[in-house]
Length: 278
Ligand SMILES: Nc1ncnc2c1ncn2[C@@H]1O[C@H](COP(=O)(O)OP(=O)(O)O)[C@@H](O)[C@H]1O
Ligand SMILES: [Mg+2]
Image (cartoon, rainbow, N blue to C red; front, top):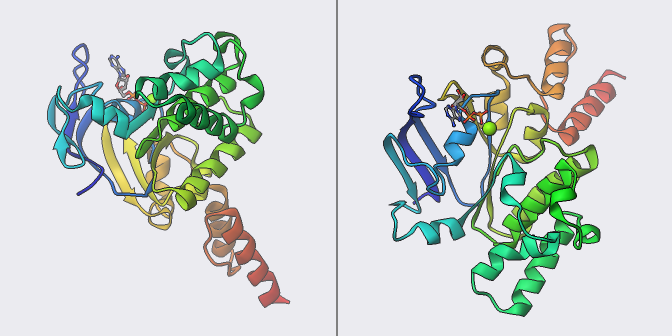
């Protein structure tokens, strides 16, 4: 049984004739790192809003742990699937950062000590302990984003869904977030699904990719399977990450370098190529 599964999920906003989602078949297995790639308007946010029952399919279905979302299980589903939306402002409303991060765990009815522990762990992970007394409303966009993500982490959901998590973060913020996602993989069974149109980040964290365009999934597979499809990515207004692009260009010029997608892989590939050539 998959944690999240959609079957021919189709969704139309009532005011618009074109379907925002058209027969989406998406699966999130346990402990996966899934990237949903797509340019603006591809349907990423609309898809994510189906994962905890904010939207209901126009047709097709959404299964959480094999069960459709109903009125009776929606609270459980929202504990199980934590979502941080693209516009973090909408999810922040408490007088201080600390209270905001504590809001979810408090609603779960946890004891004081557990709440305190979870909140401070989440603040630490997101690097925002020093702003825990600040008024969220006055924070910068990137800071608000971190607060919203900390709030979701503090709920300790089985599936963490992050809609454009790096948008508005500075390089250090992005680096910390990637580190956090990679650590989750090592330290817990949490499954992470995130959307982005920034392809450069994807190889560092994802193990499976869905590529969306105009409400459809146009490609899916591992990093190597997806990022080799240069023409397709271009056709849906996405880029190819730097390392495979550079290596392909060198190969086209007759320089043999092994294909690589992450920084570490690329470093090794270039070292091997240089050593081999000397
Ligand atoms: N509230 C809405 N009403 C009508 N159309 C919408 C609404 N929200 C999104 N759409 C349309 O649905 C499509 C998918 O949007 P969205 O899921 O936000 O894409 P993404 O998150 O990939 O940028 C787009 O064509 C967008 O214009
Ligand atoms: Mg979006």
